[in-house]
Length: 273
Image (tube, rainbow, N blue to C red):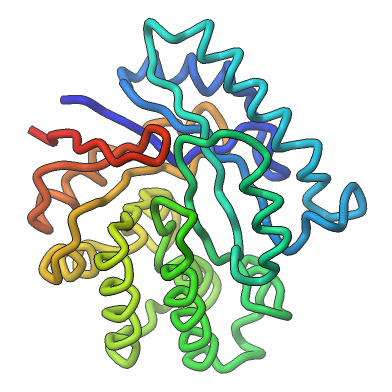
């Protein structure tokens, strides 16, 4: 089987630790055919420069691209390395989003929402101090807005806030009240021929399931979804490729026979047989 991991972060992301070369070597050792390095770029913070808690994206993303290009030359016969970007909150600041997309010629762009407008990342949120249902309503509304954004390929970790709700509060929220919002997101993705990511990072956290889980992946398929991508969200070489087999199993159980990789933003279907 052809294996991939197309959501990973090198040390050019503020919260990751391994070099692009180390990520490539790990991918080759684990038998991956495709690897995408998709370093973080939180659009609304680009203008902060080095004063940003994330560091300067004007420095980090060009460095990431240069390292990827060098690794493509070095490992091109062993690994299909894709130049990617995880574009956070693309709807918060349209001008900075344009700036981010102009950094280079990307193969693949993930769109993510890590925080709502005017709020901290869900990672930092104290869920005892907020109305969780209201936060999730706002989150899924923003994901629908993001899904309609034309300049991305796959929508990342659909149930991202739940990772931290489960970890800190010890329960998995009932998503039934948000079913219509989620269906709206899926309809937009399907209409615009965008992919939905199966992010396997949750398998190694208290939430203990993919983001989104199998039920939602199947819903996406049943509604007509064609494209799914698979990623570990690895922030170190040790996690590259880990859990991708479980992600493939989730996709198969949902009715998918292929996953998708993107080269120059063009979808390529890969059989999971």
